[in-house]
Length: 331
Image 1 (cartoon, rainbow, N blue to C red):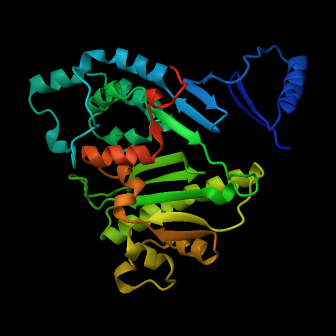
Image 2 (cartoon, helix red, strand yellow):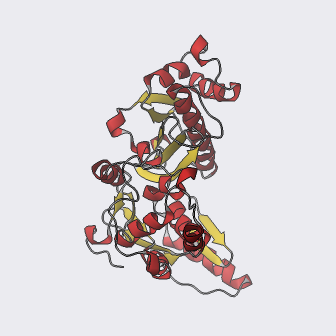
Image 3 (tube, one colour):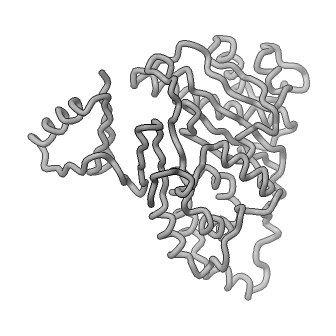
């Protein structure tokens, strides 16, 4: 039987299939170290963790931390907003303050502190904020003020076993095309899911300008596959090895064709050689790259500012819920 322990500075989290194993480890540790037993985890590193054993779910949120962030920057939150930005909103260098009066007003805004504070939420339980970290931070704080109860609902699948867990790992990958008004670089993004629950996500501007939508999608797919390889190795180290190819969903048919065609066509020769490792992984049957309709592409939320309806729909598909929506859960 597998027993896992995670330590961060002086906080220790123990995971085991039986209470007896946990008690055995605690007893061994107490003989060597001075430690306090806080019981079943409820709060860790700013995360509130609420377990529903009946439905086999865990709800993770950062309501308390989010409230502190909102209070800290309350002077810049006249009202909450429904989405972090208007549809297709793009910040440009041309939008920066030009007059001395505008520069003085901008210099008083604690930009770095706000970015750092919100980023901890984004990497923890708020994937819906990922893309908007590069947009207006004050609008993101306004959005947070109206959505501080949101968190991630994990688990709930009744057919998951230790034998098939790693096979349930999948991902969604997407990219926009040349939407940065200053550099014309594209923004790619992905989310990885384990047993239908999001476990990692990324929104990243490409390091180079690309010459086609296919290339933009392929670069994003490359980054996604690198993350999937890491997660597969991590699961294997924990004792959960995959027995079949894992699926990555992609909404570009031309990108998928390149993945399954070892010969690069003329229009795609400019794609850097290092991205050809995607083809190699597909040929070795480590991954399947499967078409997903654009309307169902969850990773779209990591590549551009969406309209209110689409944003909320994809946020729900990320399994983001509110405290009020979960019976028996409290702040």
